[in-house]
Length: 111
Image 1: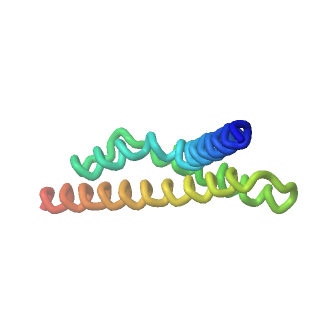
Image 2: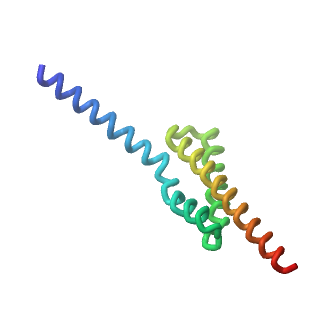
Image 3: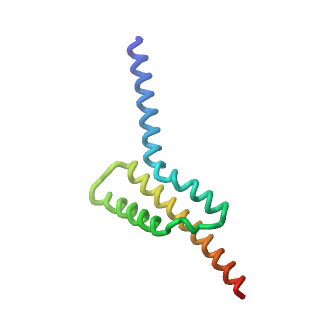
C-alpha cells in the first residue's frame, strides 16, 4: 500500500516537473522581451531596440515551422516558435508605432 502511494506521489511530481519544464521551454524565449516592452511603452523611446533582431528571429522561427513539414519534431518547439513569432510581431508593432509618433513630432516641430 505504501509503495502505491509513493509511486503516485512520484508520478504526480514527475508530471509537475514536466509541465513546468515545458512551460519554461515555450515561454522562456519571451521573458527577456517583457521588460523591454514595458520600458519602450513607458518612455515612448525605441532607440536601443534593434528591429533587425526581430527580423532574424521571425525568419528563424518561420523556417523552423516550415522545417516541421519535412521532418517532424516535438510539438513544444512548434509552440515555442508560434509564441516567439507573436512576440516579435507585438514588439515590431510597438517599435514602429513609437518611432512613427516620434518622427511625426519631429516633423511638426520643424514647421
